[in-house]
Image 1 (cartoon, rainbow, N blue to C red):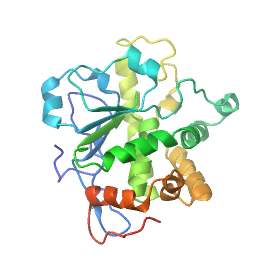
Image 2 (cartoon, rainbow, N blue to C red; image 1 turned 60 degrees about the vertical axis):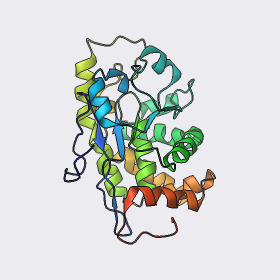
Image 3 (cartoon, rainbow, N blue to C red; image 1 turned 180 degrees about the vertical axis):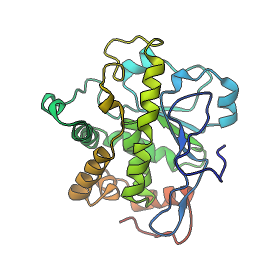
Length: 257
């Protein structure tokens, strides 16, 4: 698993996949630090063809946030097991046409907002799984590992007490990786209406402002990520289990705020 001395946000090598990293290492508001080697974000695992690398990784949970059509077009290799599939947006979802005329950061923030409106069931399923003893290491992904994956990373880090600034910095790290991934894939994958192939570069990147707007909106409406998940029916006790598993304590608070 990941080396605990690694730099925060450093790419993790998993069979040559793009945009894979351990989201451990971030400090928490109560003086702890998110444990390394337990939570990983990635681009789609269907591109992984190194079974030995996967065996070494030793995943306990594989969280697939892709649409059904993406999974059918790009199925996971048979050696990947332990899958929890839950699309973060409905299979028939499309962005608000008016939002497409917005600057890239504002458009992406509107998409993230749709994940709040439609993705509550996915958040609940993921959190339920991650409170079990055999869930780790857990890896979660969509196609590029940027937007749907980025919002789930924000949810998890927010619940663990990581600052909005660090959540935003983690999101921004995906930008160069996704551009490089798309450059690599242009002659290797052919999928009608492929969500990445047909996007301008400004939407492929991960502008800080998109996550900043999203977190501010969630803060205004729910008081923050913990307030949103509480409204979804996630109990304080469940969040505490998550924190106990995933935070190396300084002084872990008994209440999420």
